Image (cartoon, rainbow, N blue to C red; front, side, top):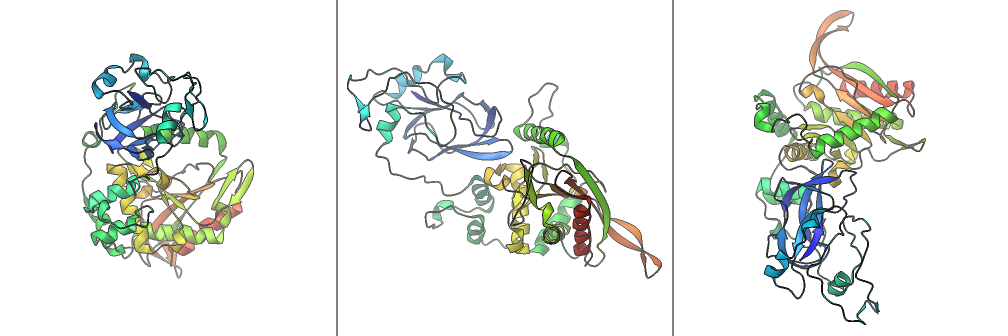
Length: 428
């Protein structure tokens, strides 16, 4: 049996949780096709097959945690049947120090065997550390896969497949030009229509729905129990922010009486952040290696709370997106955070962050800036407050804002102008 171990996924974490197998024992698979979707550092990552062949053994069950370097999949070795190869799995195969694959039993090599036009290297090979998409050099793998031209069959990311399952769409029936199937294609095929009014109605229903008890959502963590990947990633991010960021926070209230109750608050917040970034682009930026780099376009990382932990999926290029498109993607992100996890590609590229914590509770906060971004906007719970209108007191719905910035890169004046622009956008 040839053993493929869990590779280093580049997330800085030592393990991953198996979420969905795309193969079964006995299946034939080509090189680079998707084997399994795993969750690590809050992201869903597809692990491709390093070579083609028949699957002999799956070493992990869904929702099982696998350490980097431990056996993930066993392939039938060439020249051996399944029964003999499975019994030959070495007991020490699960050691993280083993090679990305092992082959038992050892096959004798002809003295002058050549691979790719060169003399075959010695069978002893060092573990160079595995990364998804890269294979260790081996005469067995190169020789077997040299002529393979078949491409991957899976044409959708994990998040799009999750959306398709939720809407009842068969991805195999969607025609493509060879590229990835998009969420828009899935919604179109399902005949799903998303509107701001529908989203607002759905949000109102969710706000009035009683939350499930914590024990019904997630298993209570016992003292000493290993935290989920999402919580560990959050801990790493917070530690980095504590050590690197010189944070300042500015707060104020926006009078939202002109639209409150007729438009989704989250949509207005997204558009207000977009407007403020145009007025003060210094806060839509990265700060790395003592260099401040304003970014275009505006990609808003939206903090999403879930039983698994905190996710920050990204609404990309919000200025070019319609209101319906943005709110539909927000609904998708919320569902994925609760049910399936969010694809890695949807968690990357944020240029500024937004936390709508007031949907749960609280008016003001000190949101934490996550490097390399330099700003985060926090929106508190809307409340009735007294304001002066034409020298007379009046009750108005007020939306509390708390904006934090990295003072290494952002001045107090820039932060104040950004807040001023948000207040103006939300008050009209």
